[in-house]
Amino acid sequence: MHEHISTIRIRYSETDQMGVVYHGNYAQFFEIGRTEWLRTLGVTYKYMEKTGVMLPVISLNCNFKKSAFYDDFITIKTYLKKTPTVKIEFNYEIVNQDNDILCTGSTALAFINSETKRPIRCPEYLLNKLNS
Image 1 (cartoon, rainbow, N blue to C red):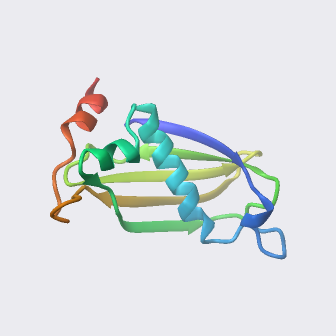
Image 2: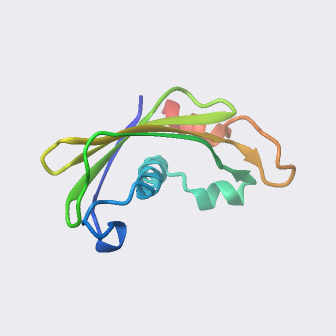
């Protein structure tokens, strides 16, 4: 299903004293992947919030394979797992400049009505973009 690739350079602030990327930063790398994935469809979190839709993370899974280091280039491969319903699910693969797999993972996010704070179905505008 739809795939997006983002590449970033590891900043010093993302590492520990050994120059290794702190594990908590991988959640942010996943966020970069999915927000850019949405952006390529012409949808942003800002637009979704304007239309009354919030998209909180309800699950996050991360499997570490190798370390990333300061000044490495990493590529975040983001894949849509299946057609969204009341939630949208992504798979991720992060590789370094040598194409070594550093991390795999997944997230699930729920579509929430910003006024009622209740789950809703995936907005039609997003489904339409996925089907075009």
